[in-house]
Amino acid sequence: MQATATPSGARQQMALWTSTITFTVCFAVWTIFSIIGIPIKQELGLNDTQFGLLAATPILTGSLSRVFLGVWTEQIGGRIVFTGLMLAGAIATWLLASATTYLGFLAAALALGIVGGSFTVVITYVSKWFPVEKQGTALGIVGAGNIGAAVTKLGAPLVMVAYGWNGVAKIWAVALAVVAVLFFVLTSDEPDLVQRKARGVKPVPFRTQLAPLRKLQVWRFSLYYFFVFGAFVALALWLPRYLVGAYGLDLKTAGVIAAAYSIPASLFRIVGGWMSDRYGARKVMYWTFIGSVICTFLLAYPSTTYLVEGVRGTMQFTLAMGVVPFTVIVFVLGFFMSLGKAAVYKHIPVYYPDNVGSVAGMVGMVGGLGGFVLPIAFGALNDWIGVWTSCFMLLFVLVATALTWMHFAIRRMELARHPQIRRETDLPEIPATMGASH
Image (cartoon, rainbow, N blue to C red; front, side, top):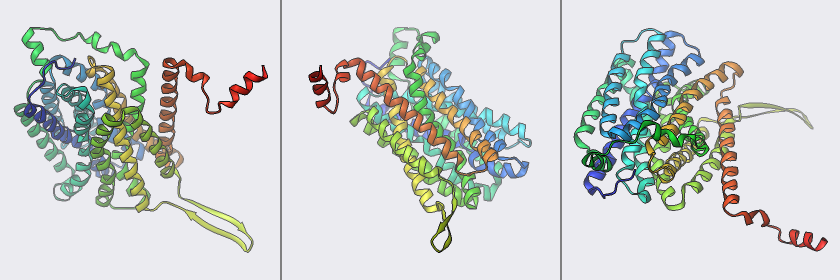
């Protein structure tokens, strides 16, 4: 339900920017295993599949919790829900430093993953402060908190040098607890929640909130987000491992290059929100998927040596992508993904204004599950076929599928609204000739 009164500009901006900063810290914690998981892998002698599972386990909790957190945010308010889950995540992250076995690390990862559910909370919370025509930009700004993945990639290796991976866990836990307190102190309850409490109106029942999830459109949006967000999280977790293994880089350098992917994939989400407001979310989704198809196709091509029987004998040449072009293309892929992340969430308050929490939660859950499933799949593909670029092969298939489904769904809706399109062609002389032949 959208607010019926216009909130003050100061409270509106405080809600927006405080949510963005706190979500950034949450995302930094959520992706912590992308860096500390590498020395843990070496200590425990894990294979790539086990590493992928460890890195992805926080994503599972953060994903599965999103529907419930979204509904609770609609019912009791984002301020209380967000503060509570951050404090719970801070405790779990602090306890991570004491883990010593693989099962212990998995349990800690499962517990701290609750902070990943914060996205649905902040999206629902912030959307209540802005009118529909400004929600794309506002949600794009708060979604830029995905840059927390880059914060971990750039900061965690430096902290590990001085304090080890245990120190990273403790410092990240303290930071999360601090921003939780600041968020609660500095922000206010949503305008519609205040009005509802003042009138004594009960929140919408849980089952009613979930009703829109039966619509196929919600699941189509979820597939989009499975790629633009799920694949983003998966690559944010996997790229340091990929760069160390495929190019032989040290962890610090790999972290910096991986940040070149994470930063645009986060900051340009603001641009994606503005473009969705200005040009329409559907058009932005087309740009996203077409650009991503091209990027993943180029990244999927493995290093290959060719032998060619030439006129003067056998010639040999190799096609391989170096670190620099790889970084550039990954940067571009991150840019297109950032546009898509904003465009997907621009749809939700427009189509489901009274069910933002549940629909945003479902879309976010499926997208988050992409961040859980894909790193495991990346590791399994490495162990199975032994080709580093197999992860991008999988992403190419995924985005091509999403693009195809979106196009035919849009085409079907256009035909339903405008049946005359079936009779119109780009070759008007064809129906004219067919008419003459009869």
